[in-house]
Image 1: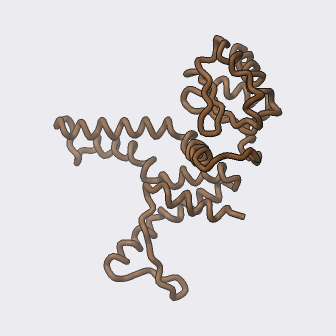
Image 2: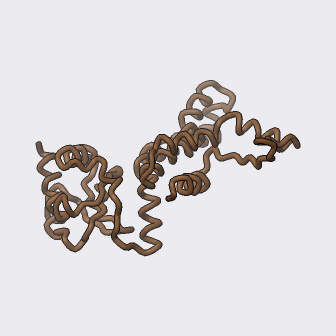
Image 3: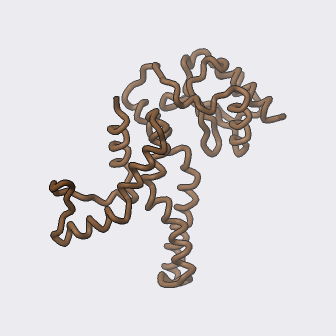
Length: 228
């Protein structure tokens, strides 16, 4: 009940449901895209005991809540039916930098917590090797390395999902495109290409690149595939 009350206060504070274009959350804050930010009651939100801070950045109206943000987000989207609001078209004009920040945050925010956790594991493994606590050939090291490296290796597939939603397309189609780019047969074809045996498609030689762990190429490819 306490989360629902806070969610109601926040929706009222940002100008009501009709003023919300979309909402998402990260580790500590709700990130709103508003139709008119001047309709938000920033001073009232800052005085709310459940709100730590209010920040306007990169075209987003951010309400910092803390560790209970996921519960508040669930209460908010359940009552106000905003769980699919990220598919609503935003007609508010933004400068190039604000659009770039909005694009990056929209694509990476959904899984940034997992990325941080796996990055910490990779750092601890590197430290363990330096200190001689673990050996790179040991089973324990390999299992932990796979657990920490899997997300980064298959990063294009995760980007396929979040970028697909951000660009307003079918995220599973985007994931299928990304998965094809990091398929083992494609990586094998790249090795054959380096050995002087390029892969051909209907007689046309293909230039194969390694897209595993990549970020920018897959976003551009998905953006191009979903462009009108």
